[in-house]
Length: 177
Ligand SMILES: N[C@@H](CCC(=O)N[C@@H](CS)C(=O)NCC(=O)O)C(=O)O
Image 1 (cartoon, rainbow, N blue to C red):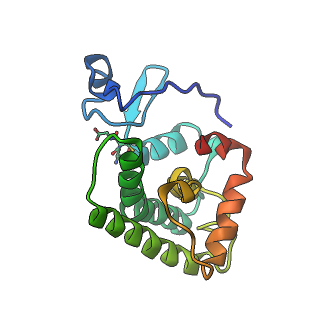
Image 2: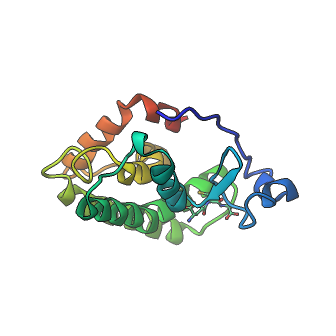
């Protein structure tokens, strides 16, 4: 594991829009990392940076075929799962309000994306064979589905087992708080 120190940015207090934060990330969003003098933002770009900078701690594959699969799943997670999950999360925190029918639409999209994941998990324990950053792109929100008001349908047994596997990984423990 690469040693790192978290610096929390309070979105409710809009710390991500303060000049000192905008100076390192002009888009005013989280996450951002600083690695010595290098600042990188956007989770996809951060993943790729960390892969190139610390190949000894790789969370992807060496071969182009499976590297592409990891990237595809990470992109799918960002666009189809994380976006609606994030909206429900920030609504729950009171940071932004959505209408009940919008929230229902977000829940529907989450369930559709998890049904898609269910099929992929049939053969392997993780999205692309072993644990990669593709799984990480789902982890923070898929591990708190109940908190988002979503009960996992019984027929998504592979997803349920995958969530349990993610929860049992020590590096993911803090995400549930
Ligand atoms: N594509 C970006 C999206 C980043 C993003 O939207 N972050 C949200 C929190 S998860 C944020 O900072 N929202 C605050 C805002 O947009 O004002 C990534 O993957 O890092």
